[in-house]
Length: 412
Ligand SMILES: Cc1cc2nc3c(=O)[nH]c(=O)nc-3n(C[C@H](O)[C@H](O)[C@H](O)COP(=O)(O)OP(=O)(O)OC[C@H]3O[C@@H](n4cnc5c(N)ncnc54)[C@H](O)[C@@H]3O)c2cc1C
Image 1 (cartoon, helix red, strand yellow):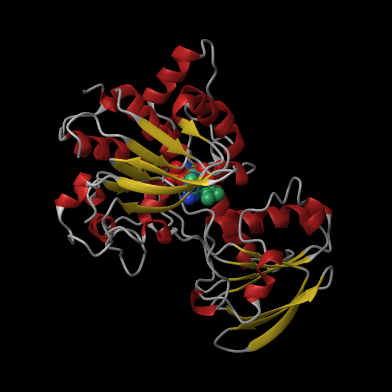
Image 2 (tube, rainbow, N blue to C red):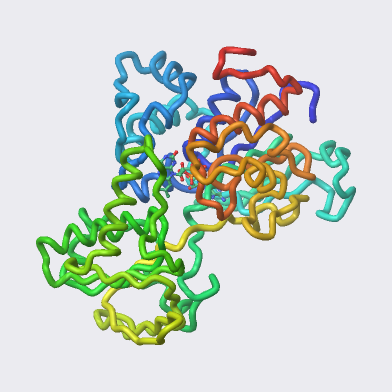
């Protein structure tokens, strides 16, 4: 790395990219944040969803103080308030973006990253690779161009790459051609998308918190629009699909889990839940004609006709971005292998307890390339912002060669 402060390229202006930018700014290091959409783009896409961790866990003192200094009288949500995604962007991420605006390039996508004059297979795992700066191929509205940097922080998240509804995680026959008619993200069912779902038959695939949110919201509109019918299928054989944690301090999380589990087990609602069921085929019948879907469980295969499909089956990191760099990936989660090992070693099932994974977990064979934020865990959905703030602290301590550097604790 350069002897003077390294030049950082930060990919993504989500909560973690912005917070990393603030860290660099506070240290006086040169940096550029590249964001392909808006500030907090992914969070805005699920802006109607309430965060289940309270605001105090989703913001840092460093961030609050920096915003407070620039915008006197700026009001933050209370530390114990669980706000909507869009409220978090308005109250915290947009003011952070404003603070960093001179170093933030919006509507600019990073397409590929490589090393100047080095191929992926040159100098395997050798720190000598760091002598050559990173080259980033970026695209804005007008053109493609090359940017360079000494350090890359990949904070691009996972929300934009959905996984597939089909059995075994690959597209079911017919799913690829039906993709644009299937909702893979979190639909605003109680708000602007209500008309699209009310009084329809909807197939919901998945058993995570996103699917639970979707099913709970569909059940709510069915109270008013009584011919709304939900066919909910999940791969798990559990009759109560959502995992709950004893004495869960995240009340919002537990509220959804418990409501969704009760919808799965009750028979007097407009929700029909089928565990141990996978999607074998999807046929899109055309505009306003819905879909024919083949569902398979150990006991039977059946074909259902539905108007809508919501596949909340999780997300996957875009690993193509760094294909030309030396990153060892965990074959199961697509996180970096070191991070996946640290997560496995931590042996915690509740993301709330995932902490202190250590700076070493962030290192890659490619020197000075760090994956932070939701993408750092790959397909594992146990990421919480609080873990991302720890990763920022640890990555900067590594870069500075000073394990005691911790701006969150006021240690320079
Ligand atoms: C519905 C939902 C609810 C959640 N609730 C909570 C919660 O309550 N508490 C909690 O701690 N966590 C929660 N999470 C998990 C996690 O904190 C969020 O996903 C969070 O947004 C992750 O932040 P991030 O900065 O890592 O990535 P993201 O927020 O995903 O940000 C990535 C950014 O990178 C940009 N980008 C992507 N690719 C490129 C590219 N090639 N070039 C340039 N820019 C690019 C995107 O546009 C985006 O702005 C939730 C997640 C979801 C999906």
